[in-house]
Length: 115
Length: 113
Image (tube, rainbow over all chains, first blue to last red):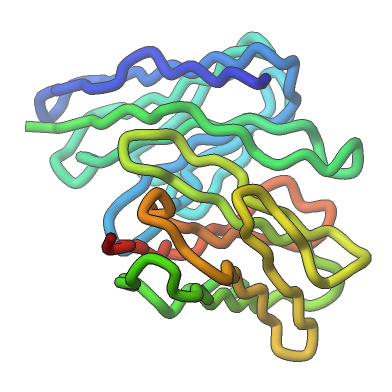
């Protein structure tokens, strides 16, 4: 079974801090994704990566950056945290489209509060 | 903009009632569509998926969805819900071959015993 592990379940940071959220998957998936989940808005894609060192912006990339130095690890970075980035952050991974049409597999999420 | 929309935000049903949750998409051409479920305190799990072929897709736990191309819809159904179906349900989709999916805003289902 696919395992997507997010480093923290809960995190509290202060405005202006640089925040790192880590995600690791154990199934050698090419694609990895970062979403934020907010009530009434569903999941919104922040960034995704389809290979090591490759990344693409999603729908709401402003204020975020990502890093993928190794295939199994995908990091989300809040360059200077702000209160409007308080949210639940979800990481997911998948095989590429056209290989086996596998769906995305999700981690448990990190609930981030910015004070 | 291309999107996936769910119009039911909060649904309350009694046990044994039938369920239908709406999902519409705005993509042309071949699409990939999914329904995910998030039980309280748990991660999102796949319920079912549609890529091609039979438009009636069966998933886990007695759920099914019907792809109706002419209506751009992919509604989720279950003939008889249980209290354990209380969860948030997300429809997701995108053009075939696109790596990223677009998720709907979710429907919170509350099943009363």
